[in-house]
Amino acid sequence: MILKMPPSGAKPRSPWKTALVSEQPGQIGIARCADRNDALAMAALNLRWDRDGGAPPRTGFLDEFADAWSSDADHYPAWLARRADGDPVGFAVGVVARSLPSLRHGAGGWLHLSRLFVVPDLQGQGVGARLLDTVIRWSVDSGLYRVQLNATDQARAFYRRAGFGSPQDTLMQLVLTDRLPGS
Ligand SMILES: CC(C)(COP(=O)(O)OP(=O)(O)OC[C@H]1O[C@@H](n2cnc3c(N)ncnc32)[C@H](O)[C@@H]1OP(=O)(O)O)[C@@H](O)C(=O)NCCC(=O)NCCS
Image (cartoon, rainbow, N blue to C red):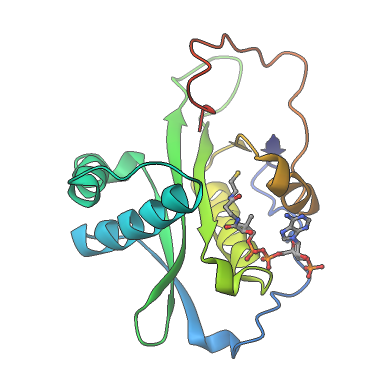
């Protein structure tokens, strides 16, 4: 699914009228991931998501994830949602592709949103919408012209509410393996 950015730097309509968080809204903060500690917190959430989905554990996964993110952090913009006590409860990670200069269009690029996850006990309380809104605002401010992602069946309606839709006909792909969902 893709979200096309509006032309000439105009901000997109905020996808959510209000972020509904039944805990006090101020109790969940969202911040850009900055260091290895943040990467380890993301890794722990990713581990939980994968394990909840039935994936087998792998020794050293937390360091593996944190090393991969830390080695090229600018390429993987990421955000964590945390409770006031610092407990991480959600995260979003993207992969940026920058366009080369062109005579036909301005500078830009796109973000592939590769992960968006909220811990089950906080789902449905607006945290995912706030994370997604943060990702979209950052993408606009960074001069990108598209946000794209592979949506799970369960999350398609969530993304549609935020303005995502099917890509235009010109966007093509060649699937190289059916082992992975392509996130
Ligand atoms: C998908 C996910 C990130 C959504 O986060 P969330 O915090 O539960 O969602 P929110 O509470 O912010 O929901 C915002 C709005 O979308 C709606 N919504 C959320 N999930 C939805 C779904 N699966 N189908 C339809 N609507 C949905 C909510 O009802 C809410 O609507 P409202 O503003 O009218 O109240 C979260 O459920 C999750 O982590 N799921 C498991 C991982 C996953 O599937 N990630 C997506 C991979 S592509």
